[in-house]
Length: 558
Image 1 (spheres, rainbow, N blue to C red):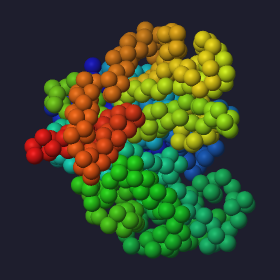
Image 2: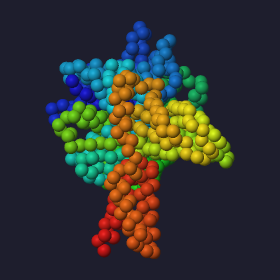
Image 3: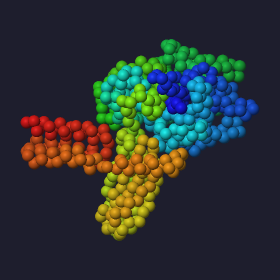
Image 4: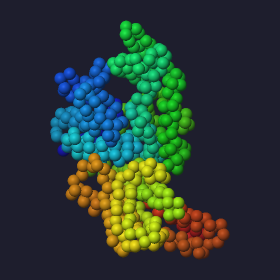
């Protein structure tokens, strides 16, 4: 039974499968590769999905909806006529159509899929995607980040050549930027950044508003059908500018024709704020990866919005690099999802290929300053940490004779806990502990399937643990228990590993033997190595391990 890969896109979706040693692109019931991510209800109350629904976006806007991927995980209702749907229900309808079409195309039943998601989706949105899949009848153990899928498709077509790559995935509703390091058929994600509310839709809206202002129209006086018509023509105008230097749009409103001529220079002007938002994640991901543009082998553009010449030119301008366009931006993510599905099925074609994943957001717990009584976030698992990962910290009593410990686990980047997302709480009794005396060792462990475990060992040796799951997590108790046992194997702190202890012992001997500048230099490298061990990021540990080894080997060779 095949495992398919699905690109569940904001604008369009598609499916692929690895079969008989090659990637097969699945066509839907109309013979198309792409299925519009659009859902509608017809006059008889029948659900419409895909191209048929998309044709009704203008003629029946109150009965049709799109771009609901942007709302996944939010507690919102989307009305189609008199019926109410959640974003997860609408997404499940798209996935169900893809499942049915794939079964018809392949001639076999499909029960499992790998689905791509924006790299910057948080845990809530990822679990909302899994919930949508469950509702459609698909089992989804693994999600793959969209830029990672695109990189996989690119590298598979280039024999997994070594190098560091930046993938800019700019689709209809989201922007993701990832940096991936490829070496010896191992693909390691170094950093991700993005904007879940930025996509081709924003260019459509910029043209839409420019058309209204240029023609002296008042948006509040337009009907829903007239707004939908202007929006559709705005999108068509944007698409035309991808292949032509000049584009025009014409809309008939109340028996009067309104027109607009647009070129790419004018598009850059009216969408200046959109382009600035594109630049921010590109700069951020380089900063997080601690790289320069010169360190990047290729900048790979995928996603429908990257077909716009203005977008490619803008990225080349801010990076001072030529971009790579030798992969189909529309299908790259779906192709990568299918390749990853083949890897998950343990297909013999991929036995040497390994792909890591990362945590796109920071996880930590709230702690209090005993002098100011101000709460702040202690960041345990840093964003961009390679998964699975496990980090332990020692904590101290915040008041005299403290007998209760409340551990609040948060997700987010703010120093102020209340500005982050509270994931769960563990409340435990502990022996009376004096102010600022050690009260516990606390560990967070996070796995590749989105299971977060917290365990606390108090000073009397009692261990307390809790598995924190999203409300949307569909795993059975037996599956959760199996995952917990696997997590237990991860709880070996880097500082406890024998090879690290040996390296530190070598360093201590070298420090005792050296003097002056040489001693200070070794001390500095050792401090950085210990910091890397403390924060637990595997890529940082690997980098500083190699650095310290090199320094010590050079000393031994003198």
